[in-house]
Length: 178
Image 1 (cartoon, helix red, strand yellow):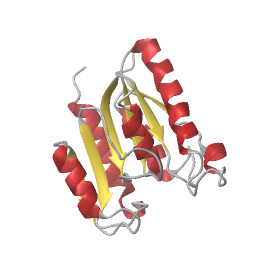
Image 2 (cartoon, helix red, strand yellow):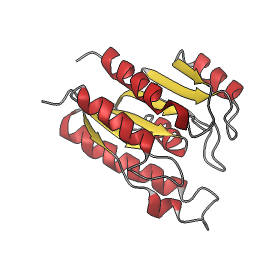
Image 3 (tube, one colour):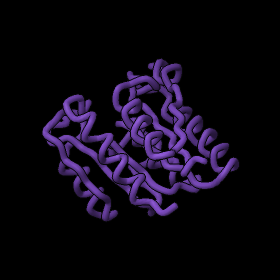
Image 4 (cartoon, one colour):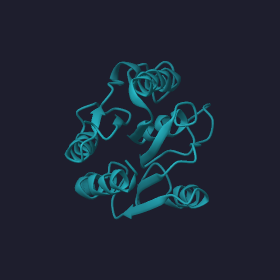
């Protein structure tokens, strides 16, 4: 029997088979969690909507999937990278969420609301040298929520720290009560 369900949202110009979300899925499944990796590539290709695709439609897709998962058995863990982190946090305000795992989360996304999240156990992984999202802003956002925070000597893609990121996700999942 599954300990719970994790929905892992990839970043912009990425995909459901991306290295980081694949590593997170493997970590979760090793601990007895079921996982789902939605594909947002069709929405990300809508460049006419904004420079990062159709963010409201991306959020709605996640809300629909999370709502279905909740209907089947309770709260979910939402995880994502960059734009996937943004929609995961915002979705947590609208569906029962056990925990959040946010990698390099943008604090603002064009005309969308500023990043906010439900008051649930939250882990944030960010890069000291993120070329898109200043580390200082993410540190302050995490501090205000008493979130776990892992800062890595890396850039926005966290490509040199995939294993460390997966370990941090496993630690979050392991800290949740059954």
